[in-house]
Length: 488
Ligand code: HEM
Image (cartoon, rainbow, N blue to C red; front, side, top):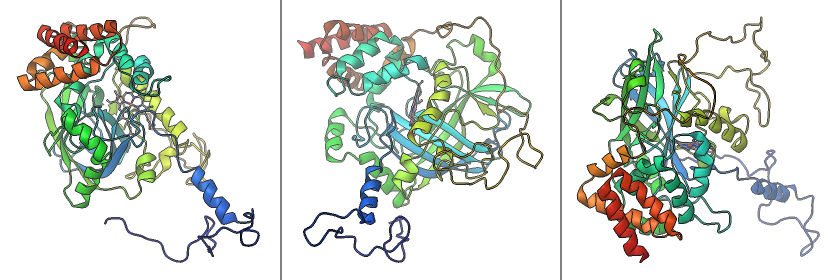
């Protein structure tokens, strides 16, 4: 075991007073009613009632571990981020994996994207990359996210996940065809958290010391190799061992078999973006490797389990807006929405001082903010002045933004995401289908047909099939036949 029992001395109350009897509550004589003066009893019952905080509205179910990122290629040509400068530089990390739709306690072995939320404790502050095991996503505008997630979670009337809702939304959102093809394919059920890749998914800005801008995508390639489960294997495992992924991660670290990922980036010079064949900021698209070959930059290893799941995993927070100098957002409309959503979720779920809990606070530097007080404030600022500018030697602004400005044009309004020469909702879904070997195509068709055949309305089922036909004629034809065979 890695966890040591550090307790010494007698059992005490929360206030530290010794406890005489933790087996019997105080009563008015033997057999009489319980006394209100039994503060230990009242304290225990009251504390127990408050043990849970709100679970994450998505990605509620997860597991985490600490690790090390080692830079193997100096990136200072592209970014001034300190942790990406100097070969051999090591940075402590914390990574939380998750499933998306299930509530806390749901089984791990399910067909669902996996979260890949990574915190780098850099010397310039924490940098969070809150990605998934998929390089793309279902939608391209944050305004659709709450509707999308409503269709993935429990229906307000039945209380269950409903195929009608899922396929109604996906079939009316054709931009989801690429990600749905990915999710329903072989990689849709990873065998463990260790046997899958991670992706930053969005395009981010890097900028170097001269202020030159690059657009970047991150890839984390598993060194354990990709391993997946079939539908049948997952059904059995989810029932037999709901904690399969969590247990696998913890046990592999306990036995010193540290999982690792090779870190790569695709880099696009800023000048390429306006005329690239795909909109480089559209989250439903990948950048084909032939256009921007992945460059290996480092190794991520997980080597330490958290000691306390509640303190370090449940209360961990990751924010796409946690940038460091040399890294910033792109105009991706999904990313822009996420820059708000996470901090807001953390203030609701963990509280205004969430950033200062041990797992969340900077480890390689200190936070010198003038934010003060609020629930559960620990007094960390002592008597320091709480305003800026001040004449008492307090911390001051640097006058250098973390990222470079982006040129914009046109009028404000509800604009659709700009389309580039080869953009449409289906081209990359079709490419992915055509890349699959025949047996993988067949499993994809069977899985999709299994789900679509559960839809109660023919028009929704037909509309769903049509999107896959637009991706590839053969894909649509085979799926239509498979759905018909199951629906009769
Ligand atoms: C506009 C779109 C999105 C919105 C509004 C959104 C919102 C949220 C919210 C509110 C949470 C819970 C945060 C918490 O309570 O700590 C969350 C968790 C998460 N989201 Fe998103 N999300 C979006 C899209 C995405 C995308 C595109 C990805 C991946 C590429 C992603 C990956 C994650 C991950 C990994 C977590 C779990 C973080 C953790 O382990 O604490 N989300 N999301």
